[in-house]
Structure formats: C-alpha cells, structure tokens
Length: 355
Image (cartoon, rainbow, N blue to C red; front, top):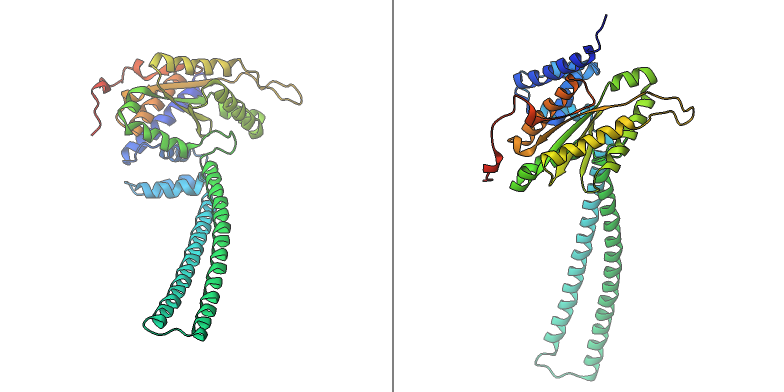
C-alpha cells in the first residue's frame, strides 16, 4: 500500500537526481538546463531522454542550448524575428540606394554649375550665350528640384515602412518573452532577469527570488485531463498577476513552476508576499464554469532565497530550488526560507563589492 508521503518522496528523489546528474556532468545550473534534465530523468519525453543520454560526459552549453531550442523554444517566434530583421536590412539598403542616387544627381548638378562657371570665366558673354546658359541651368535646376521631391517622398515612405518593421520587432520580442498559455513572462525572460540581479550591488542586497510549484499537478492532469490542467495554470497565473505590484517580475518558468523576483523588500516582507499568494490559491475554488463541478483544492509550495544568500544567478536558483523542494518534502502548501535551512552558507553579502 502506498503511503501519503510517497509522491513527495518521489518528487524529492527526482529533484535530487537532477541536481546530482548535473553536478556530475559539470552542467551549469541554469533554469533551462534544469528543465532539460528534469524532463529527461522523469521519462516524460522519450526523444529528449535519448538525446541527453547521447551527450558527452562534459556537454557544452551549446549542446544543451540545441536541445532546448528543439524541445522547448517556439521556432515560429525566432523565424518571425529573423524575417523582420531581413526586412529591416532590406529597407535600410533601399534607403542607402536612394541616398546614393541623390548624391549622384547632386554631383551631376554641381558639374553643370562648374562647366557654366568655366564657360563664363574670362569671356565676353553674348545675348545668345546667356540664353543658352539660362536654358541649361533652368533644365538642370528643375530636374534637381523634381528629383529632390521624389527623394523626400521616397524617404517618407521608407520611414513609415521602417516604423512598421520596428513595431513588428517589438511585438515579436514581446511574444518571444511571453508564455502563450498564461500570458506571463517565460523562462527566456526569467533567465535574463535573474542574471541582471548580480550586475549591481543594489540588485544583490535588495532582491529576492521566490519559486513556486503547484502541488500534485500531475494528479490534476491525470484525473481531469490536460485542458483542466491548463485552466488551473491560467487561474493561478491570474492570482499571481493580481496579487503583486504591476512592476514586479513574475514568470511561468516551465510546467507547473512559477518564479517571482522581488525588489526592495526584506526577507520578512518577501515571505509575506509569498504566503499571501499561497493562501489566495488555497482559498480559490477551482470549478468547471459550465457544470459547477469542483476540481478539488489546489495548493502551491514555495521557496524563498535572498540574492544576498547566493554568489551568482545559478547559485540563487539552485538554493531557491532546494528550498522549494523542502516545502514539498515537509508537507506541501507552505513557504520555506533558505535562511532557515541547516545547509545555509554563512557568507555575508553585506561585504560584497562589485569589481
């Protein structure tokens, strides 16, 4: 007979296996790398597992990025960005061509002026000669003015086209950083945000990471189906969004995991933010809107680590991840702080100075 703690034990064992395997292979503890090895060791993606098995004993980050692009990235986004870049390059080349033609036309007009000046220099000017000069200058000036108008119109058109391309690029960038299911930021955006923490003393001293994982989410999918699981993810994303400041970073980092980066708050204040979200999720009824059938209670486990407790983005994520799984292991539906763990390092980042 399976005990109630068996699922938690399996989750903890799997997390430990992921961390151990990554350490043995010398893999940097980036969030995306965690996702690759978690999927591989859980056996949920057979093809991905085979690719991971086929890696060398010391895989390069390029090898891992290739796997990530194949199984996790949305190729359409990158193709759209590349197409927009090509369009932008084409438009800029056309502008350069217009300007080269304008330069050629202006140089031609300059030569007409020079030739006219040379023709007038040191010679008596007859009425017939002046008439010819006026005719030549009139034609050349009219042509230059007309050409200038054409160039101005062409540049205006190209400017409008470039604005359109710029808008598309901004939209592609937004889509590339957005989780399509929940409309939260995604792992790509999270990787950049967590890396930025260690670019300044302020980031290290005044930021914290919260990792959250829905409890028994696989059971929800198995019992009610993936469409219901997706609705649960969307509802929890809405709770995150409505429970924090608009400028606070929140992302869905993969599967049933979410991440918040809190700025300018103490550990106690960070804990209160996390615990408030945890309680809101626990108290929210998850029901079928058509039938009013209840999907049961949904809870979430969380881990907190202050940036000052870690030495790098990878170390911060790793420590917060271990704290999250401590919440899982000790009963779920709770928030655990890294500072309360016996494995906590004794380093004080108040002495930190950025080189």
